[in-house]
Image 1 (cartoon, rainbow, N blue to C red):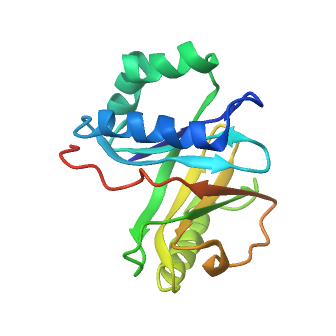
Image 2 (tube, rainbow, N blue to C red):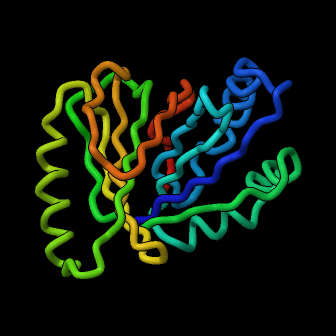
Amino acid sequence: MLAMQYSVRLPKEFSVEKVKERVSLRGPMFDGHPGLSHKFYLYDREEHVYAPLYIWENGQAAQSFLMNNLFGDVVQDFGRPRVRSWQILEFGYGSSKKAPEFMLSEVDKVCEKQPLKDLKARENSNHLEVLDTQGLFAHMVLLDPDRWEISRVSLWSGKEQAFKTTADCVYEYDVLEENRQLSGAA
């Protein structure tokens, strides 16, 4: 599995309502998209940034998306954004059946001296503990081996349910309504 995200700083005249309208129009275009497990439509109100997060079954599916019209429309409308990708070390669903409304992404550097197998074991243990948290929809642990960063991404039924973090860097997003498991995705 592979996670992928791009961020678009929206023009001032591009309102939140316009973002939601775009999401509702484009969301159905992703139904049945080969290799796409999830797409979370994310919006950072403070920074006025649209930053969707994709969960792909494999790198080929992610690459195919970048080469097709769905991504081409983003480039045409906003310019070509920088696209980040991560290896998914852990992914699981929490007990909340309510669609997520808030996403918390915490990023830490991977210590050069720490053996990666120890990192994986620690992150797996933490991941399993987080999955038992009330209000959690999903949690994943992502590794960026280019920057040697570990990201812990959690999707919550509400912001008030999200846990507090001590990570080096924290991003908070509203999850827009179109988020759902995609029907027919391979």
